[in-house]
Image 1: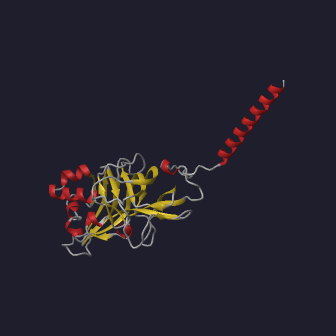
Image 2: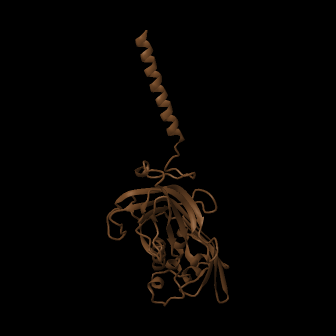
Image 3: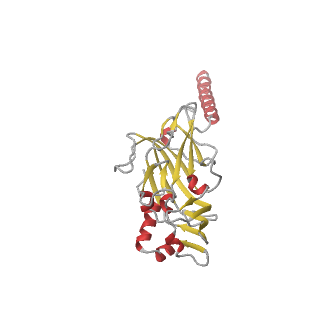
Amino acid sequence: MKRRTVLLSVAMFVLGAAALLGCRQGKQPPLMEPKSDIAVDSAFSQAESSQLGTLEIRANGEDFVRRGLVSKDGWRIKFEHVYVNLSDIKAYQADPPFDPFAGGDIQAVGAVHLNQSLTVDLALGDEEAAPILVGQLAAQPGRYNALTWKMLPADRGPTAGSVLTLVGLAERAERAIRFTIKVNQPYTYACGDFVGDQRKGILKPGGNADLEVTFHFDHLFGNGELPADDPVNTDALGFDPLAVLADDGRLQGDLGMLKEGLSVSHYLLLESALSGLAHVGEGHCKEGEALP
């Protein structure tokens, strides 16, 4: 009888301890799951919550899309919408620092993952507007010095089937062309450290930092404020080749239509410009890389 009582007491103690432990674990917030639908690399899953900071991912089309630009061939272009569909954004702490043009893979000692696909309109806001917030990640402190993402066709909304949609008005002299250009070609970008007036991606314990997906649309249309022989202009398509394809003041088309209508040399310029649109600030990205 005494032995049965001892065994029963031990069993009750074990069950009580297990219940208490489960209760405590249940009350702990998920360290790497913000309220939004964000997945985070498992390498950080054991980090102390008091050490985690917030890493913001932002998208920026710069003033070229918010206030418009003058193309290398003199067209004044105003954008109503510049829709870009972003997917599978990952930020890395890379050691050694990643150089997208040196060859080799990102050697990540940690990473966080924005496991979403969403469309942003880079033309929103005025010249003073901040880059658009794409998502926030709970992240381990450190220096995030590499960024990768994909541009995949949107599966819904006004840009369904496209990765990039440009809507706007181009004017020169007495001529005006309303255009809607849709790009349905997927792209994959791998980028190193952000380059700009201030460093980005340096996250302190419990602090905030941001990284930026930047798009340089002067690489597509050129920049009329720069000399004609500047590399930005010599490598850009400009707007003249597109204007030739307009009908009754309107240009609507996708890459298939443009490939058929443009000369081979102009279409190659277009392909190259689209591949080189993406940057991290002024830092260049390599398109077509296999992502880790």
